[in-house]
Length: 637
Image 1 (cartoon, rainbow, N blue to C red):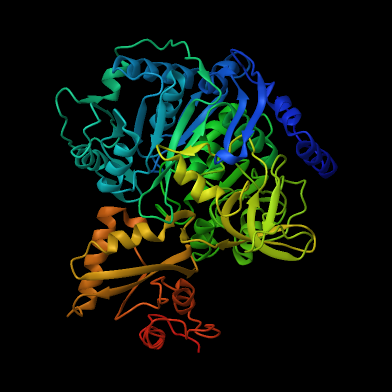
Image 2 (cartoon, one colour):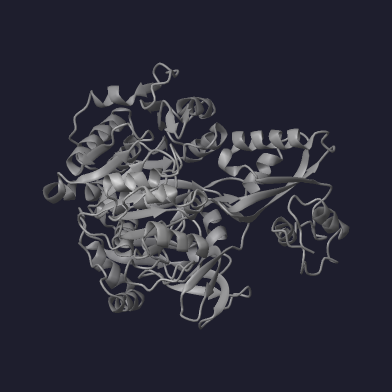
């Protein structure tokens, strides 16, 4: 295996080396993988093309082969995936590396039999069952591009993503057990595919046994198709820069953007960050509670752990079903060593007290992780004391869909921690804090906008079908730098603390949502003229959504109106995007050029109307007083 950092002095030395000689550093990490043909050049970077980045140029490989085949001789009988189902009394499933390899080969043969070729896009809309991980790896094995869509998105949102990627195959399940619910997943796919001319095949995994419609000639049962094929398959050779997957993320415009990640650099970076951040040891059982529908599941349930030869636990259920002790029951049952979850889940479980924690033996846990949003100090302390027994390091990871791997994170047991701080950059990540005028802010005890000034192997390559959008979104604010969209503070010790989004994106329960996407859905209501959406502090979700809505006619029943709006949002995007508060207003605070002053709306949503700044430049300054008066939270003036 590649180098693993063992001490803080080693971290300092490795970081220094990664900055002085990035190509030499990453070439060393890449040497440990199976390459069909070695690269001609480690990095080619044209910073003026948005940028255009090639890592391990002209290298040939297959990431599925590196996740599975290369482990068969030494780890063939080791558990690769442990699947814990939704119902606690249903038996868990363990797939060894040999068994997972056979299942991936089978499904790769199924996809090829359905006409899927290298470069084709395959959409996966599935619950957290082993077949989802198998399908991802099977796509990678044949050189097809997977696009996983979170199985909580609506049929409209799913159709948008299928059409944008022009996916020819959709892989799904009949239903989804989630907590006490039995969700009809295939029905959502049927509604979506009715609006997708590109789809010719739908493959359905049987999970819940509910009755579903199967369209003759289009729909096929997973179990029937795999019974017809061999469990042997030679992995297809792909280029290091061939697309591995598209993952759609919300942006500041209404349309979701497909973030594109390629193969070689993603492989090297996810493996390196997984092993080093968590200090993974050979026999550790690792559990990331995320959904594979998000980047966390791609990088740190499937690819990172399997590349490292780890045992990765997948969980179908929710943390509070059948009660608030479920996470801890699973940790005890499978003797979990590394536990990685979101601050939203931690805060939700805090509300239930410690009685659900105290029932279980958590002594196997040696490292904890946090992902999705900055973790607040109160949640950090509760997590450290009650789950980590005051002795387990907390790996507070900062990264994004676009970065594909950790940017800033402490190394477990090596980096001195500080609650609510992501701490220090991973090797290879050259950070810059910028002011609004485009100048880099040097030194410590400073605050500004967080950028990265040199490419790392898993940087996004483009946004699918629209490279101009990629350039404008990530590389235009600060030329030659990747702009994260986040504000950041570097404290007196040089530690980094993320202060939140500085663009029109809201982070709800660790999931980023563009304000425009939510506004577009609200504006579908026939009585809505215009809307503006902002984030506000939420004690469980981190940020909640506050919507200000102008109506054509004042609703006779505001509660009924709000229910109608929520129904539309659920249909257009999914329940995760529902606003917590909807305030009907007669106008919005706009400048004379028509720009909405979201800063004012955010302050009202936060319950703070002090220090509004100069409102005299607004088209109608009196609208601010009206909004404050009708606010759905107590407002301090």
